[in-house]
View 1 (cartoon, helix red, strand yellow):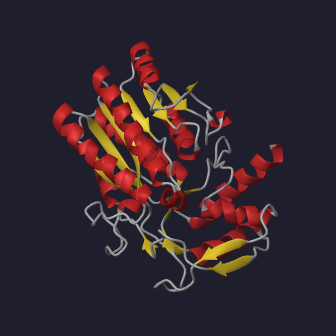
View 2 (cartoon, one colour):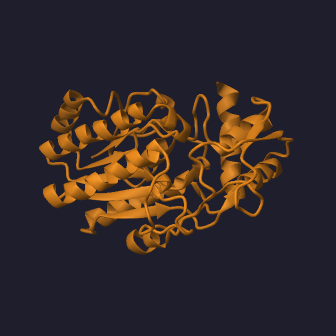
Length: 325
């Protein structure tokens, strides 16, 4: 049995779905502060805080949990700059509580949701797992802290783990079972789609003077179902006796924000008003992954590495979601 923290959230709901389809029984632990019970389409939902030691003791005592997939976190870059204490409390201290409970109950596998924000902004791209790590925001620093902590837990307690450095997760389950559902929505593609649907007046283009081909930030967008598939592949790798490691999850292809806006216009066939404005703190110019290590080490096989396909799945989900809410 697998415990999935944050499994009622965006990425977590897709990971939970993929694990279930691969034959794994899951328990989803989510406080629903950002997730939605409707997104839990497999497994059993337990509403609660992953930092609640008493609750963790109950879950580990009453269920034969062999692995924890940890996706619960605060993740907004801007918010982390404004509220760093909350991010360290939630992303670091509560994760220590979770890992300690696992150790005490003999749970030996851990899949961790990290981020490309751990990399130094001036490191050469594409980033490999050996690229310089020097986060420029508190969110990235909290994730890197946990990464280092996992290496210590492996050495001291024999913990087996996989760390995933997500690049820009996007898209939705092509069958429309789960998708992105944030209120308010912080991520680029769904925000653009809200403009296309008339829920927002315009998309703000944060920075047009970056050292890129069109002056806007360049990002590596990876379909959320491919992220989910990587978790299944890593679990299989660990179950077969494979070693602990860090994996980039991206496609190795960068698209600028301006290019993403144009792609959304093509997919939706709707006008999208764009308002250029100043850069945001914490935004690097270019972030592109070298994901060959995940392909070679755990046999990860991305299936959706086309920007138009990503946007189409997100648009289909967006229309269906807001038709019923």
